[in-house]
View 1 (tube, rainbow, N blue to C red):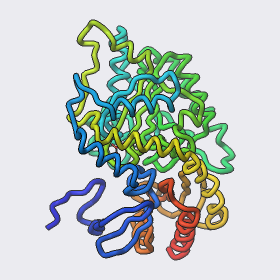
View 2: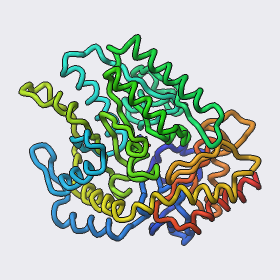
View 3: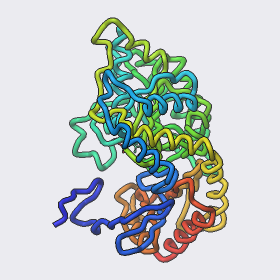
Length: 426
Ligand SMILES: *Cc1c(COP(=O)(O)O)cnc(C)c1O
């Protein structure tokens, strides 16, 4: 009997998990010797490839120095270095770094901070967030509440708090109705802010790309208009960059690429270079100052046993250095995606709605079934890709490629070739 109960897996109907023996760069090697190209950076975390020697070395050095320490009343060099270094890359208004362990907790921290920010300032009636259809922010109850209420979460609905949900103006190459979609959403948000401004805490959004919702992309100008609306109405703008951070969008952060500044930003996934669980929620000085008080109850009472773990922070510092040393690694991928998309898939009769943002390419598979995560095509394709030696996990009928930045042009092209091949057979 296998004692392990796996995440996001129907244990009865799923094939048994593959045993991974080692990983190197973009390659995973199974115990039976089979090699698999990791086309999705494992769960979107492995930005520099597997078992990067510089990250492994930093981890080893730090493990001999200090593996962990309580993070209340104590601090350490790796956390300080990482916080300082991060801030040099974020908009200057973001000044305070709060550590946690994973994307969902980074989001919970942002939710609680935003909520308490208004309470500490005598506005406890602000209890509602504006959120987006198709959004995904994690699997804890708070993070689920501001997510899109997907089919996965139906059983938990009675536990979740309500939000004001608006459509996401998802777009793709040559989308004729993008302007109309954006205008409609912005109008709806403006209406909400007009009528209920005093009840709204802020707007929670995955900037530029909604990840688990199906790699749905919006234009930078939409975020600029959204940021302007939030600023005019004095509500908080909160960016969940758990997935879009650390080069994914072709720039270090989606906020930089879109030239917008949120009041809170959530980061995780690529933060440690994909090596250890680590997350931060970074706040503006104004938010920090709303907690900075002689009043004990105005403090932010939140923390985890492993908050600010030195090993994870040490890998985070090295990961950021690697990104600084070679920004072309993540900047070059967009042009390659577009080249191979045109060459191999653009004219495929089964594919539509092509879109590329930085290191991520996505498209829809046309099927007779209703679109969505439970679409039957996903497990079938996943199995075919695996058999061919490629780790690709379609989200319903959305097919996407999100490789580690160290992938070579040739390796990337083989992904497009295998998609072309497999789609011609199903
Ligand atoms: C993955 C993800 C999360 C949740 O992060 P976990 O580390 O899996 O808890 C939150 N937000 C976004 C946008 C994500 O992609």
